[in-house]
Each structure stands twice: as structure tokens, then as C-alpha cells.
Amino acid sequence: MSRTLPAGIKRDRGEEMKNILFVIGMPRCATTSLCNVLGQHPDIRQGVLKEPGFFVSSLRLSLHAFNSDGSKVRFSSLGYLETQEDYCKNFGGIEKEGVYLDGSTIYSLHISTFIENIKSTQLLDGLDKKFIILHRNQKERAISHYKFSLARGEEFRTFEKALIDECEKIYPNWILGGYLKGGRYDVVADAITNNFGEESLLVIDIETDSLFSSECFNKITSFLGINRYCFDFNVYRNTNIDSNNKLILLFRVMLKRLRQLNPTFFEKKFFRYLHGAVMKCFIQKSNLKDSVRDEVLRH
Figure 1 (tube, rainbow, N blue to C red):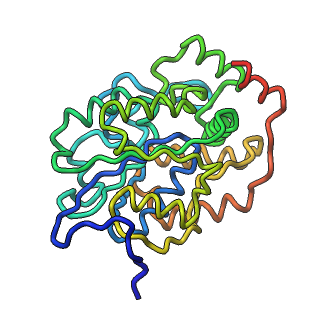
Figure 2 (cartoon, rainbow, N blue to C red; figure 1 turned 180 degrees about the horizontal axis):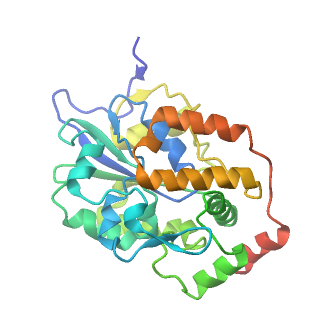
């Protein structure tokens, strides 16, 4: 029995529909969960890599991440795709009808480069370009992003030092840009609408719009011009963990190192399930001190 329901917007019979949807951010705003839910739709073509990051690969010689000891990690070691051939292979080709889903939140952190690259490439000729931005409380998002970076072994500073470095532009080529920058959805939204028009963008506040609801996903399918669908909202999520647990930190750092060797394997649904099951055994409630939260407001 089909799970597809009548659409709010329908295309004419025989009319080809080939779009590309960029879920560009913001980081730590449920983009992974959104992409995994959308990927259930028969008209949406989700790639092997949720975040191919191809359209900022022109910065590969300058951008870098960090290890937990402060050493730099080159862009080419982060698992992003750097050639058009690999980008197409990620989707199994982009000749078929449907909506191709690119969920790279790194695009929102380097929005000017992203827009410049997608406007200049011929790779996307014939594809209608759509964009979704998810956002939430900037203070809580910044804290979540910092904790997540710690858990992945990608941060070596205190939260306060990281914010100071960002304000003083100490690491301009850091791939994350900054924990404050990661919450500036308004800047990203303006850049998209100025270049592609207001009809190309859907902005969702995940704290007020009940993201994982039929109403919200009906809005998304209408925005994409595809049929409604009975989505299963029980999906893999990038959850926060207790970053003070040494065993968890070791586990996450080991995964990071292994992913640099074989990034494709770590996007398989089986591994996501296995990873989620392991993490549930260790997840503990943790909160940063109020002084750290106040530091976000001060900056």
C-alpha cells in the first residue's frame, strides 16, 4: 500500500520535475534528522553522504578543522567531496527525475563561497534550486555546537576562549567559522533570497514550528512541489553526549579518525543504527555552568 497522500501542489502529468534541495543549516538545528526523514519520500534522492560539502571545496587549501590537542586537520581529511564526479556518484547520478538532497550545513558557514560556486557551475543546469534553513535560540545552539565539537574531539579550547577567538578573528580559516556565526541564520537567509529569490527559501524555527509534525512536513513537500507522505519521525539523530565522560570521548575520537580513512562507510544506515545503540548506553544528562551561558549573551 502506498504511503503517498494527495499533494497540496501537483505537477502536470508527464512534466519532468528535477530539483536540488540544499538543507544548509544551521548547524545543531536538527538538519541530520530532517534529511533522514525526508529521505523516506520516494521522490527525494538522498545521497550516501548527507553532507558532501562539495560546493565549498574550492576552499580546500585554506579551510581546516582541529583535533582536541589543537593541531589542524586538513579539509581533504574531513570526508567532504572535492570533484564533480564524486558529487554525482554520491547520488548515483543526477539524471533521474526527483529532488536531490544535499544536507551540508558547512554551506551556511561559508555562504558567499557556496553561492558563488552553485551559480557558476554547469553541474546544476536544469535543476530548480531550493533551500531550507533550520534555526533555534542562538544561545542554546552555540552551547550545543560547542559540546558537540568537544564530543567529536574537534575542540581544544574552553567555551569562553573560543568565543573570544571568534570575536577577535583569531582563526579565520577554521571550518566551523565560530559558535556565534553558526547561529546567524538571518545573514544566510538574506544571501539566499538576494541571489535566488524569496520563493527559493523555506526558513523554519524548530522551537516554534513543531518540526517533526505532519503539518510542518506538508509545508515542506508543498514547498518542493511533491506529493505529501506519511513520514516516520523515528530517525537517527546527532545527539549530544556527556563530553566529560572519557570513555565516550575516546569512542568519538576513534570514530573521527576512522572516518577520515573511509567516510562513506560511516554514513551507512546500519552504522548509524549501531552508533546510536552504543551511544544510548553512555548518554548522560549534562549542562554547562550558568557562567558559560552568560558568556554567550555577553559576546
